[in-house]
Length: 82
Image (cartoon, rainbow, N blue to C red; front, side):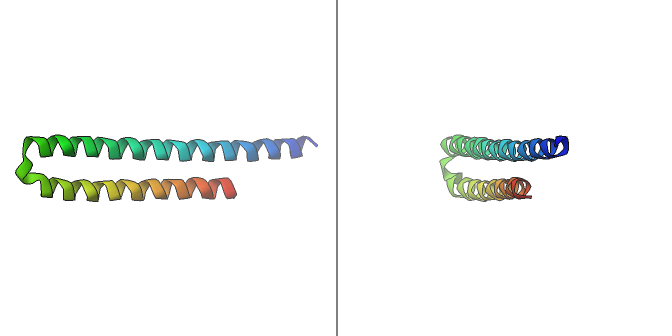
């Protein structure tokens, strides 16, 4: 009886940890992409002739952040389903 209760408690904690982890991953990705966008707009405002290069670098950086966020979300999903 006690062992079953402990197993249910641990399964619940794993689910809670996976949910919190997914939330932190989404928050980090949002903050990172927001910061990249803001800094890119500042750079383009200071030097409009370099806008194409800044925009290209911004898109590549945002894609890399999204990739890491997707990886983190998949790890949290696997944690929750195991």
